[in-house]
Structure formats: structure tokens, C-alpha cells
Image (spheres, rainbow, N blue to C red):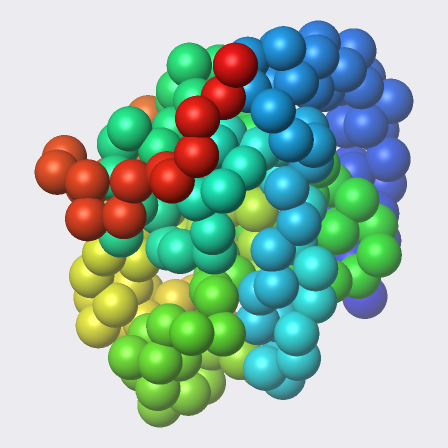
Length: 197
């Protein structure tokens, strides 16, 4: 109950303060490549329920729905590189927090196609908690390119961590832990298909 109340208050406060940043970022996205500024992607949430996850678009519109570590670096737009490095692209997920799809802190939501990670998370009991904008694994530099390790850390969070631990993770995130982690493929297995003007 305390966690949810904190999430809602913090998300509304964040939007009230950061909406100019999101507006400028959205304009930069639209000017830098064709397509909408907001990218909507299906993700698995609490209880394995699907929800629409919002992000500022950092890749070319025709890239498709792939995990970041499976996407070629050339699929990222010029504005997208800065947005991903600073994590500004995650700010629209504050709307997901208000809606109740996500929390500020929790396991990062995965795509419904990431079967290995889903199986590993089921075994660890991860889906009993809401996914988060940031989490334990992210502050430790572990992302979805290592599903087994990620699921183990997510399981520790889901089964052992509480509200005070969330505060520590938030402080670590705001202090820079996990920022800049962006493992796109160096060689483009799935480059974007179209050309932007």
C-alpha cells in the first residue's frame, strides 16, 4: 500500500516537473526521424498480463519489436542515442506507473516473445510483483542480454526486497548506477529497413 501510494505521488510529481524535458525530447525525436514520438510496445506485467509500455522512440520507426540487445546499433536515431544514454526515453513510463501497470522500482518488463527470460522469471517468482522503470539488476549493470542472471536478481528483488530497498535503488539510479548501459548489437543483425528523409 505504501509502495503504491509513493509510486503515484512520485509519478505525478515527476510529470509535473519533467514535462518540459519530455516535450523537448519528443520534438527532437520527430525532427530527427519519421514516425510518432511515443513508442508503444506490449510488455509482460504482474501476473504475466500484457500491457502497453510507453517510451520516447529512440529507433527508426520500421525497426520492429525486438529486445534492445538484439537490435543493430544503426537502428538507433541520432536523438535516440542521447535519450537512451540519459534514460530520458523512459520518462513516459511515469504514465504506466500512474495507470498501475508499473512501479518506479521493480524488474524491467520483458517482451512476450522473450521465452527464455519468461521461463526463468516464472521459476524465480518474479511475476508476482509489478515491473519497474528501474530495478536491482539495472543498478548492478545486468540487462536482458543475460536472461538467467537477470532472472536471478529479479527473483531476489521480488522475494526479499521491500520499500526501504526501493528507496536505495531509486537513490542509486538517480546517482548514476545503471545509466549508460545500452547493449545494442555492434553488427546489425536486424538493421532498420526504410530510409528517413
